[in-house]
Length: 158
Image (cartoon, rainbow, N blue to C red; front, side, top):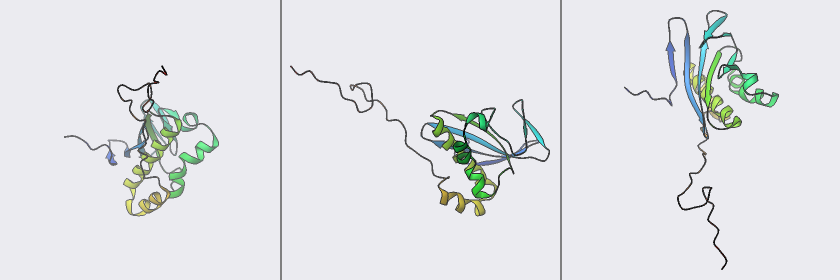
């Protein structure tokens, strides 16, 4: 049976309980897992993570998205829902550029937060625009044209 990957899901393993969701922006895709920890640390993919930490592609989020402005952007879904430090987050991000990846990460985290308490979090996240997927992508190159999507070949003068 094929699984619907655009939906968030709740999963319970032997040791860990987490909420998973996929987020996208432009060409970037992010799969985020919000872990509800019972102990202080957890081992995810060979990396030990403390409660409240955020890991993106097995790196601390401060290292993956450096800078103060980036920090204020990727923590915004947690601030608006008042859940800062409540979950341990692990995310895999691919494709696109830095800002697109950050948008995909925010989209995935917001969808995973919906899975926790939809009635409470949905109006807050929807009002802030965190649940909206940015569909803009690079236009495909057409055959017979120059290098880019809309560039025409130059015609000779004589």
